[in-house]
Image (cartoon, rainbow, N blue to C red; front, side, top):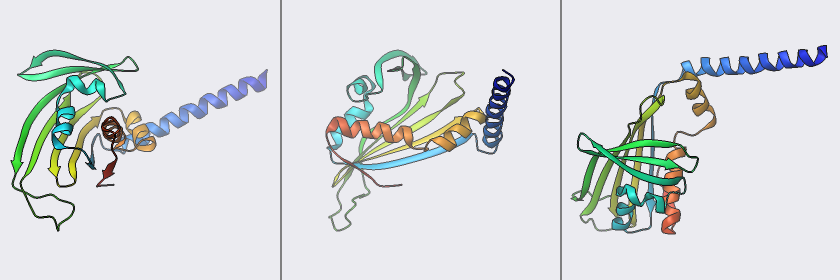
Length: 198
């Protein structure tokens, strides 16, 4: 019996020590972070833009979503509640929507291709739920190129808790969420994606 208590005490002490070490490590990591992923997808610009810019259709291709509910606007910006397969939800707001415009820059991967005007659109989405301990924005830029469509997602976020910062830093890649998002998009379109930045 004494041995059992000893093992329990040692086990609890070890767990507390690990949690303390994670917390201390988290204090050394920055509260704010940036993650960036750029891909090339072999699909028409109009198709990709339509899927990314229309929240209401995301349940068609995002396998992590159970539903999307339109909420009241905030300061004239559209707000949506994403309800996930786990049952949890999150409020998202489109703070900027730049409709597709002709770009004067050529962005072909193959520099031998004759330059031509390209089409570009941009979205900025922000987590607007309060008291979650984390938040931030995604800036999604969609650009028509000769080879298909280039999609760039830039995450600017923050995590308040040092403990969770440590867990995210040790066990997850900064681009994990972005990568899953883009992989679901390519999977729905039935095409491969090419990562342009590692």
